[in-house]
Length: 469
Ligand SMILES: *Cc1c(COP(=O)(O)O)cnc(C)c1O
Image 1 (cartoon, rainbow, N blue to C red):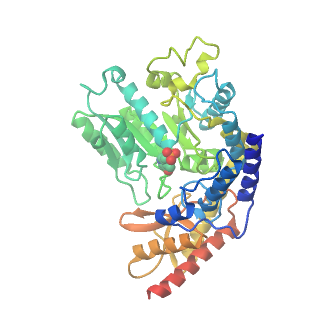
Image 2 (tube, rainbow, N blue to C red):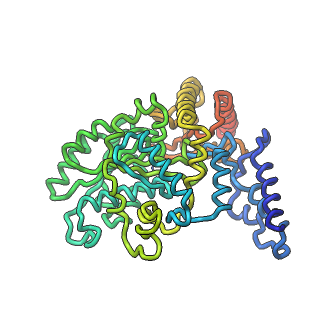
C-alpha cells in the first residue's frame, strides 16, 4: 500500500516537473554554501513516512538544474527523450544487472539487437560491440583492445619488457584519452598530440612525421584516435587521409564519435562528415548526446574481428557468473565488459529507437545542423557578437565583442545569464581566448527559440556593457 502511494506521489511530481511552463527557470547558479542552506539536508521527518519522500523529491526538483529548458546549452546533452525516460523507470522497477543472460535476458537481447542495428548503419562487417558507461570508457576499451592485439603477451606479462607503445590523437581530442593512457599503464609521454589545422582538424602531414620519428626511435605507433566532432569546435579529423596512413603503418584506428558520430543517422551528413567510417577498427558514439537518450547511453563497435572482445577483455574466474555452458551462456555480455554489475542501458535506447526510428534521429541531427548554420548567420549579422572560429559542424564558438578584458566580460555575461535563470551556456578556451559555446541538443529547439536565445544573450550583453563603460 505504502509502496504504491510513494509511486503515485512520484508520478504527480514528475508530471509537474516535465509539463512545459513558460515561466520555468533553469536555476540560479547558487554557490554550494547558499544551496546547503536552502536544502537544509539535516532536517528529518517521521520514519518510513511517504510524505518525507515527497518533501525531498520536491526539494530536489525545485533546486536541480532544469536541463530540459531551451536555454540549457551547457553540456552536450539536454533534457532526455520521454520514451527513454519511460525506459529508465521500467529499468529501475525491474532491477537487474545486464551482465548475464540468466538474470537479464530481455535487456541482453535488446542490447544485441541495437548493436546489430548500429553495425549495419556503420557498415562494419563481421563486427561486434558493447554498451559502455560512456565514450570515455569506450575510448579506453578500444585502446586496451589495440594494446592487447598489438602484443599478445601484454595480457599476461603486462607492459614489462615490451617495446614502447605510442598512441596519437589531435591536440583537440577529448581528455578521456589522457585518462586512458594513464589507466592502461602506457603513460602520458606516450600519447602524442598532433597539432590541429586552422579548421581544428588533425594535421595529417605532422601525424605522419611523428609516426616516422617514433619508428626511428624504436617505438611502436600502435593506435590513432580520430576525433569525429571535437568537443569544443566540432571539427572532424579527416578519415580518408588517416586511413591511407593506417594502410602504410598498420596502427589501430579508432573513431571517437561521442559527439559528432551522430551524423551517422543522416545519409547526407554521414556523406559530409564520416567518409571512410566503415574502415575504422572501432567506433564509439554517445546516444545520450545529440540523440537525446537518457544518460548514460553509449555504444562501442568493433569492425571485422568478431571475438576480439573476448580476446581483449575476458579475464578472471568465470566459474560463478559468466559460464559459457549455461543456457544462453554465449549471451553473457558481462564477460566482455570492464564492469561486473552493468546497469541496463539497452531498454531506454531500444524504446527511443522504436519510437523515433532511424529516420527520426536523422531528421533531428539534420535539424541541429541547420540550426547551427542559422545561428552562425545570426552571429555574423549581429553588431554585438563575433565567431571566434568558423563553424566546423554543429558547435558555435562565439563571444560578445568588447574592446577590453574580453575574456572577463564574456565570463561575467555568462554568469549573469546563469543567475537570470534563462540561459546556461557552455564556455571553453580556444588558445587563450574564452569562447561561449552553443551546443544545440534540445529536441524541441527551433528557429524561433534560437533567435530568442540570441536576443536574450545580446540584451544581457548590452546591459552589462553599459555597466562596464
Ligand atoms: C563527450 C565526449 C567524450 C566523453 O564522453 P562521455 O560519454 O561523457 O564519457 C569523449 N569524446 C568526445 C569527443 C566527447 O565529445
